[in-house]
Image (cartoon, rainbow, N blue to C red; front, side):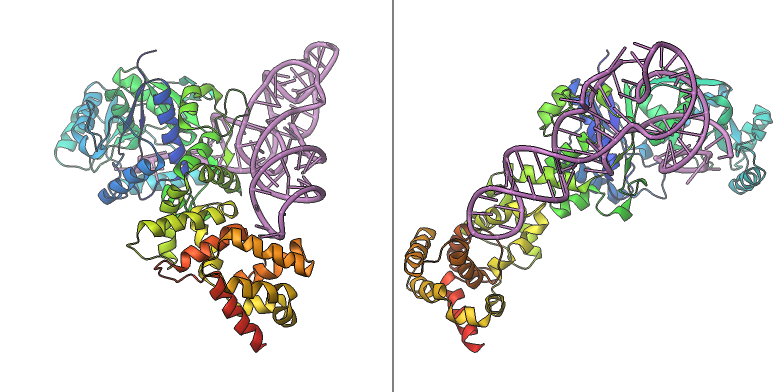
Length: 496
RNA sequence: GGCGCUAUCGUCUAGGGGUUAGGACGUCAGAUUCUCAAUCUGGAGACCCGGGUUCGAUUCCCGGUAGCGCUACCA
């Protein structure tokens, strides 16, 4: 096989959809597996929808996702420029060539006229297809009219009857030429249409494998016709299945988090997303392994392990992978990644020192097995930052709160500690266990409630050091020590 | 409407002419823990329908059905 060159060609229209992200990922995996080249090309021919400012966002999202590319608008390369908007002269040149060689022609039909014909055809139950009217105009006359400034689009003459290509994921795929009207190559405004620009670019950029969404299958015959007209060899095609929402409709914004940015904001780890998206359509050779790092996937990746059928996006499974990767990370790293979420929740203000970050590591560790993604950390850590004595009392019941044998004995012992460690806390509980005969749940539960204001939460073993260390830090929201909590609890209990 | 693509547990998938149809997420149960969670163990759970081909089809072929896509001077 010649040296692999693949491309990812998004249009900068705002955000990177997971479907596109997966296409990018598969191209990247394919390139890396074969030691080939990944080209990033910006498809901004649709001037009305493309905005320059979206491009930076696009590249940033892809980098966050963990992809890199070898050639692109930001790093150049031998096949540039990498923005379609900067390749106009190329499209013009090849469209002229096609006209001269009789493979394409000027079309003077107005969009309104075409739309009307289309509607009529639809109503009459006919194929809504371009009639080919302007094919009949003599080339000299057409050239004259176009030169005189008359609005003219350029269309490709479809002359083939059978289209056939061996799709690398779908296998032999065929289309009849009858169903394809002469496609627009260049719009009357002078901008190339998608089907034309891709072919010119893919060929000039020497793309060997076009890996893209299967919504492009129906476009492929048009493109193959173009390759033939231009006398070029078509690349290999591989069409990836669609990603659907839970309702089996094509995944879209209304399904919630579907863009790279939204997953970042949720606190999903890019490695988890990569792993998840890899599994959407591809499977490891053993048919079983699901947790794979980049190196493992790259080593195994192959187009013939790709499913043809569409896949429903499953946030639960992504969450599972995210939990896995979260636990894999050093605590300090998780703490760093959590910072924006603490700040947003008003629990932390910047700047903060290393001690705070270290303490955050403890907090994060305490709640790590309760969360799916990082944006849930502040809520899960709520009982560290907030202590509601009233809630504690009412949870226990006033009687119990005032007269609990356990609490009556534990409280003074804790209050007597200048700095409570968990080891000491354990001892205290042992002593009280001996004198009251209470153990297990009966022993721990009242203490937990009095200390946290809740009857469930992280292990006290983790909470107590967090309370103590937190109370000594200068935080946006001060953390109460165990002793402070008990004092406040006692006060609230007396009032009931 | 026309054309195309697709069809294995709820979901992602492995598999393939004869299998106890495998794995994972989720779910249920048990174990464990001061609670919740996590963890561990176990369970339930699938070959879209109808015809062929065949000794035998979930697997191959055809048709149907359903979902999705394309049918643009969007990409």
